Image (cartoon, rainbow, N blue to C red):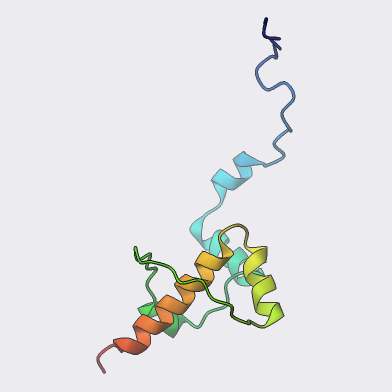
Length: 105
């Protein structure tokens, strides 16, 4: 049986990228931080909590269970894209670690 070969030119059939990469590359850290502060969807966490927060990805067995969360909280995590359950677990893990080993006073 003969395979059907379809030829395309480089980039043909791809969606056009509408990102203004020149503008992005000219952004300074100051402008980026100002934009983050204005963004209502940016992570709103108290700086004092972030000082001690750590992203932990332990290699542990997972336990399947049924749990109920507030709908708005689940929606917020889902809006951030794939892996929302992993992020929720990471937030709970971070809180657990902070409470288990509080920083010295």
